[in-house]
Image 1 (spheres, rainbow, N blue to C red):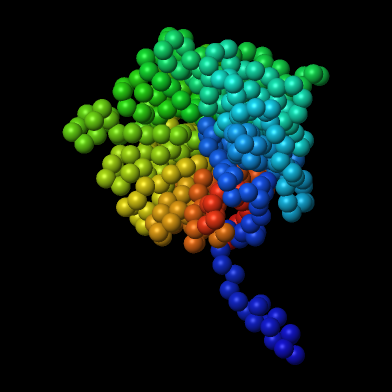
Image 2: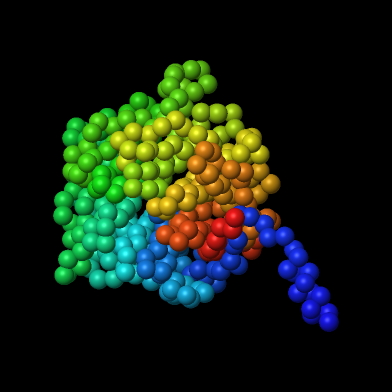
Length: 395
């Protein structure tokens, strides 16, 4: 009788709309308080999905030096595999891209160059010809993908783009080109790349040619020749006593949200008194242009800095932004959904918020609309833990 009453009470409870999260699981446990994980990478591309398999890439010091690792969760499994090293020596800022049919491509920085390989196995392919960093990846189709990175050209680094393809021997570099033919006037860094349904390629990056960090973007119809860069920021870059050479903006991210839809998100210091805010903009022409900038976080996040912004979407337009901030006293991971007109109220991810420090979110939205989230949790005893959870949307 008591059991029946409990069931009736449960059925009578309201079902709330929004993201319904699974319990968080730890990935790649090191069991050592001196181990620190890092999820920093260009376009925050450390989490990918392919044929129901999930892959998570990160860097930590469990081997006594910075190493890059890849762990995979098989379709239907609750946990991730034992981490696999991507490089034999020091390694930084790894990324992973799902390619369909359960395959992945991983890329990373090591020995002053950027590298890639299929599924983290086999011979690594060097992509850069000079000192390079900040590599990221974007899929074109099941056989081809693009890599973008920052590579030294003279005194400064500039953004390079390469097209990669699978062949019988694994991964093949088809070509690599600079986005701009002329030598860079100042450093370019942290590119994000996205490919639209018509094969057009859009790259956004940090650029200092105006002596302050701004976000530029450039589009190519064929992935070889790019149109002149344009500014993603719609606020005039006016020199003032408070802003110096201009407001700062950093760490662009790009996500494809439909055949011709691209979403960009970045950290922006136009409100310089409160530090960085999360801003976004959208393209409905495959990246040839972007519309007005919109602020992502709600008013409860106005008076403190936001960090580690990212955006993820699927072809059906399901779109989520994430970042971390300390509005509740310690760093928590916050999410915001795009409803077609604006970003909604901020949502604290259940196991990525509360006491302690949770930060550095990675996002992926799969074709079914499932949200995948990974983040770092700093432990009270020292070190960090790498966490993962999934969520489904309930209307």
